[in-house]
Length: 138
Image (tube, rainbow, N blue to C red):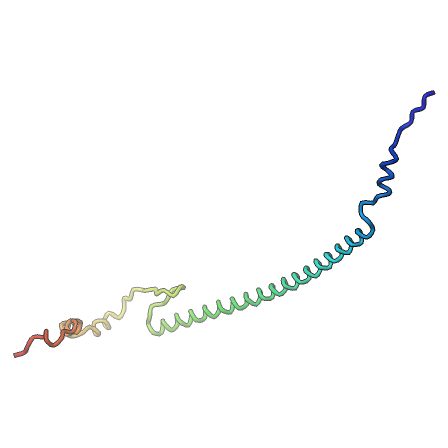
């Protein structure tokens, strides 16, 4: 009778059992480093959370201030339009530009404001001459 036996190298099993990959001291240092990093990350997360809350509050305050400014601009624009209507000035557009509207009334006022002597007005618009260039009166 032939007996078949399998050979298992005992040397390799012994090597794994006798020589650990890390020493106990190395494992403890590694675990301590991991705990320290974990604590640092928790502190950082808390700091970031506080900063986020602060930024949210500032954002809300800025939005409220923007709405106040927008309301003030609208009120000032409305007052300006009302004042222009009272003064008879043409209304301004949303960007402050003038919006001219044709006027069909008050043509009589224009005739009343026209000078009686157009020649006198023309003389006033001429540039002033130095005395030596003026004609002599005889």
